[in-house]
Length: 152
Image (cartoon, rainbow, N blue to C red; front, side, top):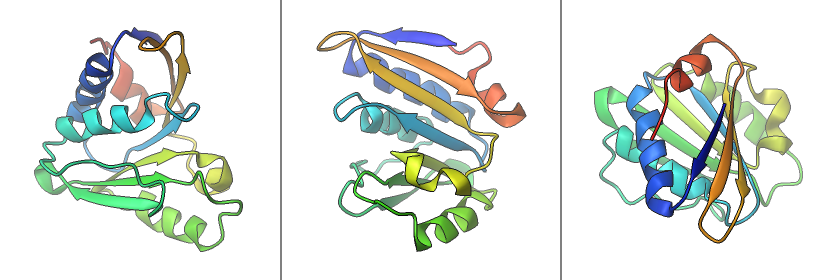
């Protein structure tokens, strides 16, 4: 499935639509160049999870955790600075096994082997300064549910 977003606001709206569908236990992998809009999309997901806290990129901290609606937790990872998964692979296996946690991962290549196949992969490509083309790829039943009939 492909979706084109024309602004930062539309990116957040799409994220909120996805966030509103989350039940817990889902994994979302975000793929795109620096500045593509991965953290902006995550901010929208946080809105859909009723997270009031300001969502920041975890580029330097690797992980940020936020409490959301219905006792759900958003665990946002950014592995841009890692060359090797190391103990992060173990942590990720634990986190993604928790049915109350939604895991969003930027730069997931380094931890690929620790991820389940049933995840939503969102590839973000820049078409212009403000316009992005998103390819949403469902890896299984749970992730397919997130994108069925999705629009902004």
